[in-house]
Image (tube, rainbow, N blue to C red):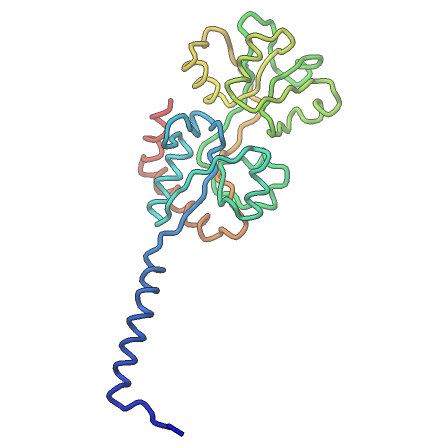
Length: 256
């Protein structure tokens, strides 16, 4: 039987060989940049998300991109249809999406950052219409064009009772076109900035007026998986910093 053991001279060589094999792997793992898979939706949500060009843009993308980079994350755009977003977040296929807590069926299942911007939902009404919105009762027997998948707490009881008819569309652009060219539609609900952005870019500003009274004002946030607490805390700290130093205002100015 050969019971020879490695000589003492061979041991340092074996240690060096082991180190050479192990350290490159650790260095490779350490050098990998963490990623955030961020939903921008197939059609975007201008001016918050714009996906017309090869590289996404818009208020929420620019803010997310700036903060992710400073936190050491690579931001990856994913185009997920609205009806699949929540489940894909829960299953871990994506990490984040822009969302208001009020637009979410089961917000307790997710984690929300501090508000990035304020959303103000108003009615966009054809200029030749006599409709004036003060209370939901002003909309009884009317048909309102709404965004597919969105929840409107002030109007939900009246949608459910049928006193106000709701007509869902998936694309923001179509909301205004339906109202403008369809006889059965009385108004569209949209964020004031979103509506003005679209009407200006499409040359349709003269076709609409907005209701003086809004139906809701709430924060537009980043919605994350529940296990993203560390990222959410770091995001909130950096968001507060860019709000204070004027960088957030500079981003907003690009889209107003």
